[in-house]
Length: 226
Image 1 (cartoon, one colour):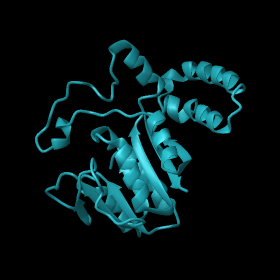
Image 2: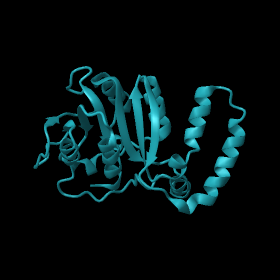
Image 3: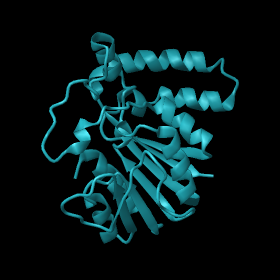
Image 4: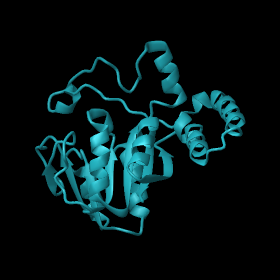
């Protein structure tokens, strides 16, 4: 299990509430299968039908309408898949519809806003997670898809627009090489935040200056549907 998947798995495993769970763009269903072992009624969907299916599967293109009824799931996970999808606005609207009230959405994604990624972009003109030249591998059709990078800023706006409230941010791991730069950045941000009177804007600024965003390799966002 990938590092980010393992982190989300442990969070979900520790959660006392089970119920229906959908893993969006779930590959071969390995993640959903592990969750079923812990008591979740987990299924997964993907655009491509895998050769081996490890959990209940529904074939679906996440760039169009999702074939599930309204208020079907207590939890939805979207693990490192946003960068392969074209229509993020539509996706978040669809996820809002299929989640029950007070349901939770788990998003894991490469963090293009960490300090290392920002420095890399300054030097190269593209993000290290999304290089324009890829070595396509046989049986990995998704590698042929042009990336659609998305940052925490866009995800924050899409969550807010669709009635979600961010509960927690996690990082898969931290990149401590940029620690001195992190200290300087956070000091400046605290100074600037003192002049922000809008509560929502202040919260957003604090999240952008958090250890998870500035030093986190991949970030995990847990949001609750209001």
